[in-house]
Image 1 (cartoon, rainbow, N blue to C red):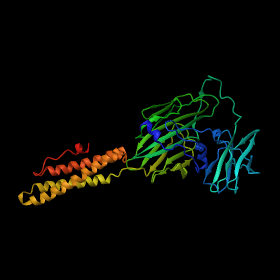
Image 2: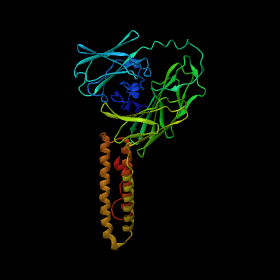
Image 3: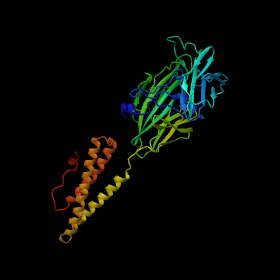
Image 4: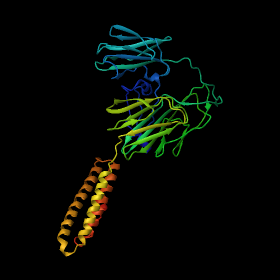
Length: 423
């Protein structure tokens, strides 16, 4: 896979309007991919107070989630105020940190506020939609974490995990899929750690064009299809973003990946193209999410232990049906046999041979016209390189067989080179 294919990946500005809650924090309405850069791991603080229209809430409902520092640190029983025109509504957050206001007047300008440990949190002002609802987060500062270590502190032996902001993204292409691992490798200790075993893993069999994407830690390196993250791991997160391609000539691609650390929560996003689908014994929930005029499959599952394979099957990938080519080859072979048979019958079969030659000539002309039309479509950008190459090979192969049949006849001029005609 050419690294510049990343720039063609159309997950730009994906807004997760109705992604399940466990995925919302990882994407949070932020841009997933910049055109020539890497995937971004959003800071919850950057999402604080930003309203997101959703379709999984009742019409005119406002859901406000209050957290401290990270998405896993919900604040329960926290009073939240919603200013609606000249009125103020109040609700307390539940165990998931959410306070919900229902049946708010459509069109009214509203703003959500709360105060956590003396810190006032406030949302943007926004209108209440008539259809669907609004979700937003208010993120308080986590003051419990002091400095990680002193500069230059020596590393200790410890463990890291692939954190719950990690995800696997799959982009179907023509007879292939582009696969992206967006790994948030977390060290929860307050000092750098060296893991008991090196953080190394091999990409699946058949992976091609592997690359470490921009935005990854400089500790990440690639040797062939082996990914190595050098130690020690600093406190906090080390981001590693890997991309590769898997062939899917029959419309199906299987991803089997073993990671050297616990994968805390499986999160998968697949762009849906036509009948694209995903299946895995490790996926617990999935749903389709419309965004930016496209449809995505957002799926999630539980933890996967280190050394246990992550297994995904992606189906319905666009691919070229090989049946027409085989039919054409069989027909061409039949024509060739008929031509050989007709050419050896002698004087009493010349009439039949002439008829057959006329038929072969007509077929040759049609194939040449198809070849010219294919070249014209390519010049005008109406056919991609993969489909052009496959179709051209099919036409040239059939033409060669037809010319071979014509050549066994003693009548007529020397046949032309079909490859030269198509050039």
